[in-house]
Length: 374
Figure 1: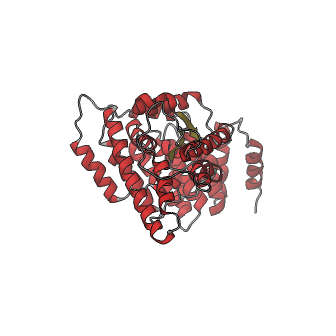
Figure 2: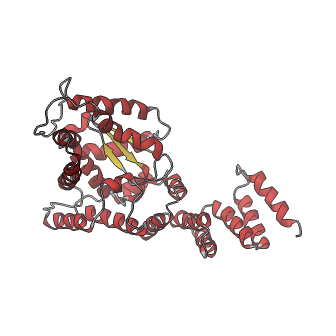
Figure 3: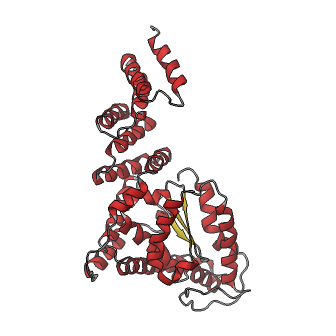
């Protein structure tokens, strides 16, 4: 799990776990949540909402909250396009966390992780994931899970399997709702299974055991992908469906640099390599992407990684948007390989491009050291 997870996860699970400590009322059927509906005071559901509201107050002052009004507004606009009359009751928070993650609390608090924004290729793919979370919210799945827990309390053995089956039913239902919402909102339904394809490739690279909490709760299985493909094949599309790739890239481009930095620093190198290859295949910002491929190889440092890092940095520097930092990292790798002349050249070129760099004094000291005969 990437940096910041220790802050993010408690905010997401606290509503269910805390409420489960104080059962009240009898289980029963749970109807869909209506746009202006709030639970009655003294009910189990009111307890769930209360805990979610406390978590939301913590989130508002959290260091992981992305305080970019334009990005927040963009993501909220996508959510509201999907949510329709539920929109006024929703609060959407973009949080800095390098995981494929979105969550929907029962009180209408939605969290969207920056790792999700990096992994969805366009607005339509994002809309499917957010629609899935809206499905959990509209179907009141938190309350359904709590009611099921109450009904089975005291019979722990059979309960575990039953609860897992119930959760799988929730996920299937949310998949259907999310797909329907994206399609009815004018998004290209074929993008839903494409988003799942990318997740499956990352999961395979990680050995099938995802560390991201979303993938632990929503495993991107072949069955679910095929179901989405079937939905897409049967969907009735009128007019030109919206993909929203250009708008999406324009919104992310100003912040993508630090999204990629967070991803590499999460040290999930195998999955990050797959992600970066997907982004390279998409063809936008290639210099920046090849630089971060080099960063993966430099930081991992396994046998054979350093030559790959050098090749990636060189490729980045051949491209118009190759960052000056590729020269700094290239110099660092050359030092590790013992090529002091190449290291001096790369670091000197870095200072030429970035004479006002914050680390310029450190680099100058390195250059003096490299010029000293050994």
